[in-house]
Amino acid sequence: MTISANKLPTVEVQISKTAKRMVLRYQPLRDEFVLTLPPRCNKARAEKFLQEKQEWMQERLEHLPERVLLQFGNIIPVLGEELEIANGANVSNPRKGKLFILATPKNCEKVTTQVLKARLYYYIEERAEKMAEKINKEISNITLRDTISRWGSCSHTGALSFSWRLVFAPAFVVDYLIAHEVAHLREANHGENFWKLVEELEPKWKKAKIWIKNHGSVLYRYGNVK
Image 1: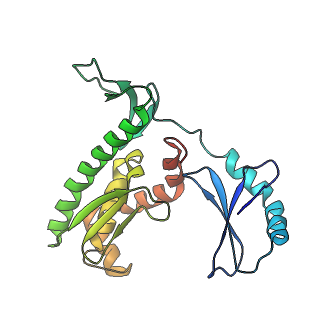
Image 2: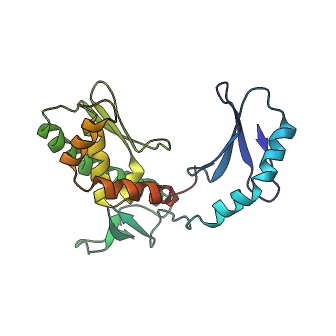
């Protein structure tokens, strides 16, 4: 079900059995708004709600940074370093400030994404293993996903999962999120002992937490809309 919001992008509508009120959110992966409705909420009421939210939606769109495609010539942040995506087919000596990708223009986005995921994975793996060893815990598995609700997670089996889009964040932010999930290997909640453990693993965690809160949405501006 979709509802047109006049000149704004089409709004995807979802009906939730547990929703008690209408909630409008921006979906960064698809560049669209999602309106969650409680059961038995009629279309007329939803359309009126959207009319009242038009100014907010317009402001939200106007403040979004420009989308940067993962194509040759574009500059992207990679763990805090600004790199230009360059064709690496005939490059023997990699140069500073370049991210060389062996691909055609047609599959540059796909190959660049794979390269970025691999770089982030090895970055996370090395640091996570060291942090886990420091608190005498073991990691069963590490995976990268394309999530919206959480930047990372830790299962009861010791498996860690992270958003691959963290590759566009500064390294100290990634370090904090690694420490956050590793700390969950010992402390399942977010109590006082948990945050003490996070600080032990990553002293800059407070600065990083503020950064991800203020700038996290920007990480979704890299790559094509899904």
